Length: 128
Image (cartoon, rainbow, N blue to C red):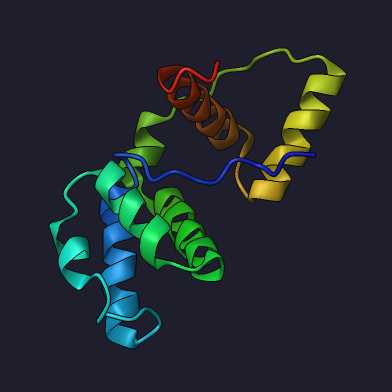
């Protein structure tokens, strides 16, 4: 069984992710010795993601992911741009989506958006 897709830093989450890492370096949770220049120069989500892949351990990356999702939930801009829409899913689709959302500690909507992002990246890489 293949592992679940790893969270990828998005444009919407870039500022929160960079802020979390900067604060973690200040607290000493993340070493500021290795890769600081590369971190400071990361100006896009892709560059920051590459930095995270190179310098963060899985446990720290999970903390980053949770912090970013918490910041997203607190964001007024994010909440004000989200309108509720009802959709019909068959039982099994809802069951599988709910299980994945619970595993990722995300809402159903955020899980759908994450899956869409993964799909387009895989398509761009020629995997799909």
